[in-house]
Length: 123
Image 1: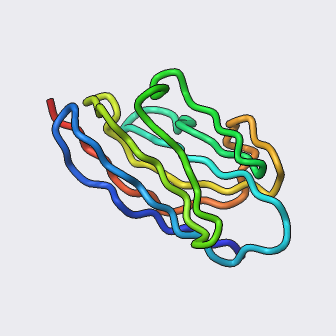
Image 2 (image 1 turned 60 degrees about the vertical axis):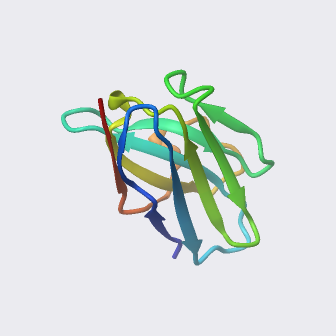
């Protein structure tokens, strides 16, 4: 069973930066795509960034140029570097893993989820 544990959330002022981490364990020999999602109060969970098994990345339009997804395979850790944060980035951020090579960003493609880490950006 894959377990995902997020960390790195917190409170920052607009324009600030945070780096989220997601430590993964329990992987099998299968290929995985990884992603970051977020959910603000009263809103649907939305995809923020994804990285496929070949290292290709994708981003939501709202975070392009500000957020960077990366992974350290040796440490089984996924990262999300968030710069130039805005109040509208405030949400619970979730790490997710899908048992496939490529994910398009749909929530249904991801088999495993972390518990989330809160990010709050004040103006």
